[in-house]
Image (cartoon, rainbow, N blue to C red):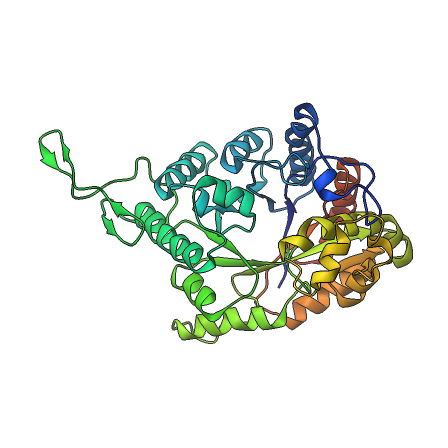
Length: 388
């Protein structure tokens, strides 16, 4: 039963000349003053969500993007600030990209935020998808096998540090502690100082492909999964939801309901009619696909379409995905509140273990539209779900 509503803000600044025929992604450059507006924009969205009963605001960690799409390099620092200018809203790390961190620095920073905010920051980890980011920090991404190996070892270390008063680790990428002399003795173990105040730590991870290895790893560590959020295809992906349930069964959970420990993300736009909603949000949808398509996060695009999407002279007539198709497929919720309620009720019925959904906006959506839409959704959609 859906009782919690979240929203993801990946960190884009307000933009002009958007859509398939607008400025090409690689030509979109902003000065530092405009890139810095991501912080007051984040604060405005957080305050709107806090005032309107949302559960969690998720934001994304990214680096080196003068194009203006994902401009928040330090989620944990920003989350501590936002927790201090709001009252009840929680803040999700969606996600800290583990290969861009030393795992112990990430564990320490999260523990500090957990204590300073009274538990209002939710931990989240991911493997990354921007070569410019991960490889620039000296970690593998082009080598996907190495990326996954490193990520899995880092997560093992982080949970040891969270859950054990003293511990050690020997693996392929890390030996902790190093066996060195220290103040008259040889190091054999470490203690994270401070550890989070609330244990076990709630942790989330994005689900893209949903391989058995990935899902089994998540369930082993009790990591919950977020599907969608604007980059995964198809909204509530049936195969992933049942794949996660099957992983829970393999781990010994008795008859978990589909949707348990998951959140499904949708893009949305409310308007008096479906047609008006699609018309108003079309350019936002297209800008979002321009950004994510070439990163292979939308698998249905062909190589030719990916080339076309980067050329404003060809993209509008290249047969690229449309907002109409996304609305028809259920990944994009559009139209009057009663239609969106009906669609979410159908999702709730299909996946009875699902208690959390995310409703967000594509890249390119300006702050004024995001805050207006979130307030409208809270007033006319959320009350129709028990617990809200």
